[in-house]
Length: 435
Image (cartoon, rainbow, N blue to C red):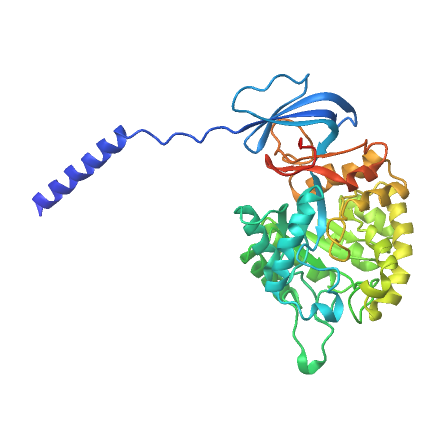
């Protein structure tokens, strides 16, 4: 036994000695990219800077500014001297695995696997539209979480996704499945009633990978048999959801169109109100007091009215006609009253890739182009928890960079035609490349 132990100790000593002499593996080479920007928007000051150099190492920006200089051997050069360069955009309210032509009964034919395939297609469309980061708030079967992981592993091209998985709903609520008769009844994945049940559901959704918790606090427009003004979860249930999510390090987004639902959600501590169509002075005061963001999702109203015959289920048309004009009026009042606004679109209600059309709606309701753009670059980034990593082109931030023709500070619609996209230092689209 002593001989065996002695031999083992000698073997261990030899392994340690050999390991000490083995050189550490070489660090991977630094990939340096230099962008020449004809015009570069400084998000903090709102100034448009001419002829700027952006130096990128791997996925991070390391230096910005000064006159452009020659590129050293081994460095990649990207010429955007004829473009306006701005940060990649952030959308805080998408349904990336949803299809705009499969609402209502048509959606019942779509499995979670099929939704994931839609998501793979629409993720690329969204990225090429200039949205390098999105928050996805609602998907069946955790399809958005699987899509996020596929993008992060490099298997699929798409934006950086912060995903919620299924949304929490009361039985029969906006995020339940209310389209089938009793004999065919199937609850949606996020249905829970009562304090213990909602706590369990939050834990379950986080168990399967959610970055954020989505809760349906009121009825909705595209759901059957509910009232957008009516609250759904009780205040006590809302408090339990938020407390459990925050305890586990997740923010909470609350679908809420109006009535007590907005106020209860904000008082419960949610991080954002989604839609807010019927928000009134009391709701505005409550959001301002609690520092709750509102995510307006306004462009969808214009698109739905233009495509009503094919895009709106018959049971939702009366609600849509009632809600959408009120939303514009009430949210314009919220904007001018100083509520914190984070950019979000509800893409999937209308076609993915049109997300940037939301900006011009904000402008028509009273925002300046720069203020409208900051709802994405600054506010949506902060809401998601990425304010120190995305939303501006400066040293230390991820190299999420897009380019357009024209000057979006004068006409924000320039962002609707993105011609160059870089996410994390990798180029996914470049229409400025020399042919």
